[in-house]
Image (cartoon, rainbow, N blue to C red; front, side, top):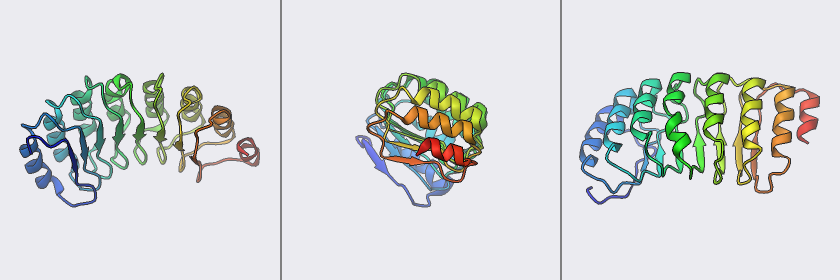
Length: 219
């Protein structure tokens, strides 16, 4: 695997032990740019070995680790490894029980990744404070196309902050804030932020707390 640049194992069940063995084999590789490990049940211990394996890989562009229960400890390890990686384009961390501490650990990596296109942190435990961290990291991202912060207990406060950043991003195509606790003020912020988005193709705002007034703002 020394010269492998892309490895896709999404949707398998390699589990923690399989992940540890795989990362051991990949460690000498310095050519890897894309790693896809969604839905493999690697858990925290597996994610620590992923982080260690990625330390010597300068050009990591895509990292998919959704549905692995890496928790904030895993996010912390990844944040330390990725903090100086400047070529990240896609980071997928859906459903990993990541809290404010975990997303904060990833903030330097996200801020430094000027070419970031896709970020999925849906189904975690970020809350408004965590979403504010995300928003601050997305400032000035000229190539951003997708942001998914669904199911994170986001209220109007977090939504307004995120939209204040996304309103300046002209490349957005896909935004998902569904399954949160966003009310009318948040709906109005979404509507205002997206009013000039010519590239927008997908907007998911279901299962929030919009009133009729909020729905009308989005219409």
